[in-house]
Length: 403
Image (cartoon, rainbow, N blue to C red):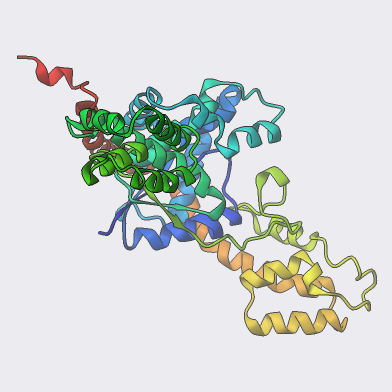
């Protein structure tokens, strides 16, 4: 198998076509070539749904049923429930000991989600600290790449920074502090203050420009040897022996699945088609979709680019069907219901095998529990390897010191 890949989903309700086209199709490609760990992030669900936790358990099993229904293979990928691997919580706790509060407060989604979810009280430690749990999810498995969309790259950056900071604190050579002190003394007090200010800008505020400025600044310090310059730059960047692997973003193709109203398909917009939607409801929803407002009457020509249905044709229709729709719409040769019919047929054809396999797995709860129990065992074994290194680096492997 290839590199380790880690990804998870919060169990907050049934999956829809947006999840399928935006995430799950990518997982299907990844499981064929990599060692994948896919988990139901029930602890993450608690960060925003702690007051209504009674629905999380049902949502977890629905999530796993639908993963299996679309073709996620437990023989190829490790499937598990986050809370069944307690190492996630332990590493998150340990990372919290060394995480500056300012790092958590500047995570882009922290204030955004508080604004969007004003009806919920998100002034909690769990919500503020969710990036620590997210980082633990990734760092536990030694994943060098994490599949994310372009809008999620900033969220991954704190994981990279935490790995860098941990390695700097606990992966340094024994004489590194002495070498850093020698370098500061060689520069003189004024230059040392400038250097420490640049280090604070980078490590506390995440200002990447400070690294380039520090490189130029250190080169200009005549009293430094090449070895001391290298040591000071490593100290500024937080580089040390690699205990926790610093992951890179594996950019996934942006989801092309629109919602019923032309916006991104999202439960919060109420514009979704669930993966297991009944055929009757699918037809009803698509037939009710808004179209080009210029087509008031049947014989009014329209513009497909102003119609949400046209975006569905981009996902589901062949070039020939799209050409027929374009010609028929712009000349008023076809009506809006005519245009929607191929989309209805294509969506139903895509859903039929998924719905059938979902029914199969939903009827086999014991087998489903066996799959996630086996997955949790594999996940715990891999996670424990990382935690053993972490505990040792932090001098917390007390039990091994007993006679």
